[in-house]
Image 1 (cartoon, each protein chain N blue to C red):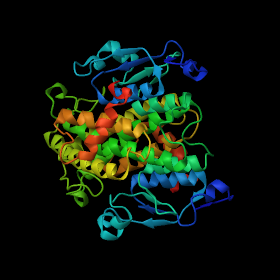
Image 2: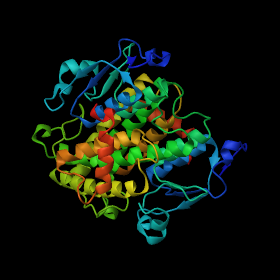
Image 3: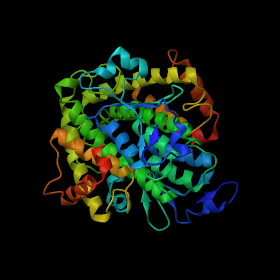
Image 4: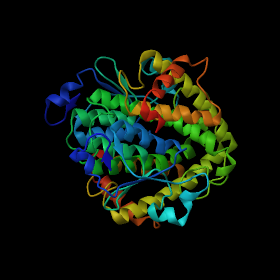
Length: 227
Length: 227
């Protein structure tokens, strides 16, 4: 692990053998990539194609028996395999730039929005996606758990609730320039990933959501968004 | 807001008008109550009966238009309406006893387990519960969003995955006395609330899960668990 522009002691704590198992197209790994880009931290990555089922092959299950991506492997072999937990690890290791909030109220607002976007946005879009795409016919729930057949009604409900979520974000951006207040935080990372993922199920901010569209254009100006 | 045994300046920051909208039987409000009990913080509470739909009545929607519980109202009228965001607010306000982790790795482990128990446990149990109980016939998704009819197949899938989650916890307690390591954290709070909620859909740690059952007995010895 190396910081791009300066070698802080914190930046080196992760050690030379740190590795991130990643998937370019999947939303959760992208959250970690954007987060690391905002921190200026670079880590070697290994691409795993979930769509082809590489995450459930023996080679990957030997790295992570849960078969989920992203997975961060530390020097000593410890694995962290949950996207926001990985982000919090790096936030604690290298606190600046701060992305999870500075005072009790900001910390709570960031957490509240980041989770709300997951529960009302990401999860519903994922439900619409995984319960309709042929590639996920028998694994509508992620990871290496029991087989889960798709439920078409759940794909429909996911779409309905994800549409309602777009309205929520439109209202939010009428109050606030960024998701959790007046500056960029991890809640914006979750939101941009969520809104880009929404296109996969045919949902897009257009005439009805001008503020969401404007915020998305702002996000595209940040180099991290391309991560 | 008052600390039970000592009046720290942090403890008073929340101010005299702080109020928690609560529901005794619901899992998410209980997480906040246990958390506050562990911190020794007391806050006036107002009971809202979700089962009877009080959360969707005008009086409550005037407090929180989202119609969700728990909702913390601060002195200046600011509301926080997400259980873990409320917990993080109090953790930042009054850091001891620490419940979210002390160093980067512990912080990541706590977050990882606390979220995993939500995604694999709580959400699946909630799916089984809300998609089968007559009281939630047209509101299988929580809060004041669009009406969502129940999906019986989703109740079934929820049960299947929640059973698999019990096995995961049994394995976990073979490695570790507490959920996230060698001491009690918010991950144990999420776990005990989740496992008690599981009984509502007929899932119980028994012969097949002796370690889970033993950990539950330990948890019952903590006064906070009764909160």
